[in-house]
Length: 105
Image 1 (cartoon, rainbow, N blue to C red):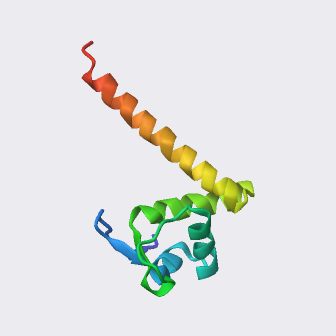
Image 2 (tube, rainbow, N blue to C red):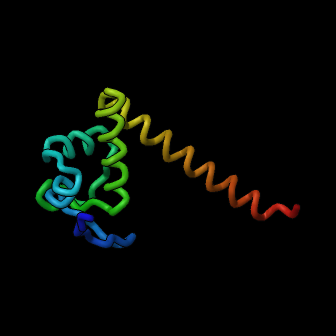
């Protein structure tokens, strides 16, 4: 049996990623991340690219964007719309789940 060692970083809600961190984790060039920022998919804190800090939820958004582009061939404008719609669906599902839990049987 082969043993495999996995390395990782535990991220919490207060974690922020630099542009280079996000590029490394997504295995993508900075130009791609910058394009996601320009389309509004990602919203960094900071005015200059060298100072950008991305909230930890940017990682999930970037990975979703990557899958949409790679698997479905969606352009960046379509990715921005799809990511927003997917997140809205998730918010509505969570709200519905909470309402279902609050409602007596």
